[in-house]
Length: 450
Image 1 (tube, one colour):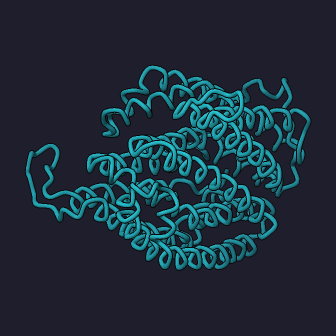
Image 2 (spheres, one colour):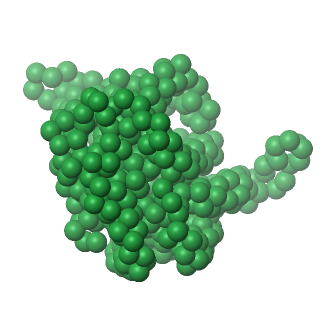
Image 3 (cartoon, one colour):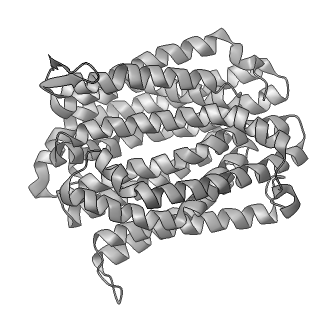
């Protein structure tokens, strides 16, 4: 478990350092409107990766099963079919982004100059959507094969390129021009572009038995059907989470740029707690899939429980540290004259720290169910928690009054602002944790066919 989780943890830590780098760059050298825009663009980039989870989740589960069963040839064929499906999806995402990108920003309630900045950033990213797909799907396949190191190596290069280009172009170091906000977007674009090319090279040369070959890229109806049967519910789960998160951030954007900036700073610091969960989630995904492929149901269950204990322990420890140092951590990402943003972000961090055990269980057990191919129940739980709890409660707790759609009824709210929205997030996490624990303890995930 630790051999699988540690490279992913380092990879996530590097990714967080890049996110921190962008926040520091925007927070100290640009303005509050740029902070609001970068917060929204973080969600949009997450959404892009989530689109490709429609393919990646199924690919991870199937590759893990075939590797566990000793059938590396079929695992390689699955990888090729996953990249084929990903290429089709990347073309659709690019086209929709080009046609509807500016409308997406407006739908998410970002206003004025912040909305214009977000649109500029999105237009840069559309150039590298196919390479983001290769990065996401390629790493998903390699993780299914138990290779966490390749993803770490590639993402290390991605992050180094991102940071170097962004800082150089924002500040105008040496002969390079000072591009400000455009420099942040170009740095991210260059990083993901390099990452996609590196993944293509690795898979073309072969890695852990996974190899891209032209004959295997021809459509295979059976493998595509199995990929979609397993991956689409898991991908829809990811997309529902991301879509509801975008609805959630639109609620916060309606509270103004100050609330949006404070939310962004708090999310940035919270990611320190979040990243161990991603690492142990990936370990649980791979172990559950491979042990089930080998027919060892006992070890499949034990490995997931161990991931919950170790990963959850790390997350709870990180949450306690963030609770104690909430305000100093928030101050790192803003200029002295924007102290109000840090003051507003600190109670958000203390609020979410209370729900870290629920977050850990939700993340790690969801990863285990996906690795087993049991992707439908996590989708149901996400919809219940996000649509049934978080979004309506965020509106009710954040605003003084809300209008219920469809019937036009106006009811009084709690008017707690962005803090109220984060209370709703904590309640949602607790509800989903209870549901996912019930499904795992039921044991039906061990009998799912992929």
